[in-house]
Image 1 (cartoon, rainbow, N blue to C red):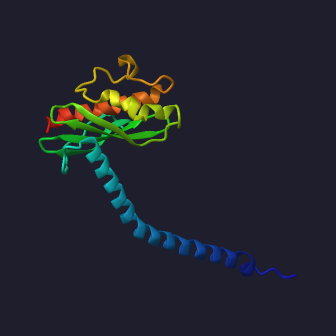
Image 2: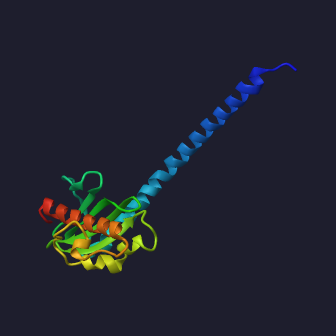
Length: 185
């Protein structure tokens, strides 16, 4: 039997390349349709979380100044929204047990914490997520400063979830530093 190199090797390769190109363009097209919807939904969820953390505010303005970075790449302010005369909501990203933890912290005009909400995390369900629960984060409400970046040293940790507790605690510390950096509202 005579071997036909084109039919055995080249033609199947060309067919696979064509399929890959078609699928790539199809995925790019679907992404171009869904990306704005996803971004809009994310923005609405963030606005709702800001309103929950600072209920007295009717509108927020994004702060465009310098954002605090406590530990480069590990603890930093991602964004800051100010409600003039009322307070601010700071979004902080910290390195936690399972990866990056994102939390929003509300701070009133006097510099007191009004609420803490963990919006994204990859921590262990059950144990690590106890540090994200309202029952744990509620202890920060009303505080105007933290004397340490270590949750355990000030008795604000969840036993068995020290890394997650510290991530939440350090994020709140960074938010208070951002408030000081901005000079209040």
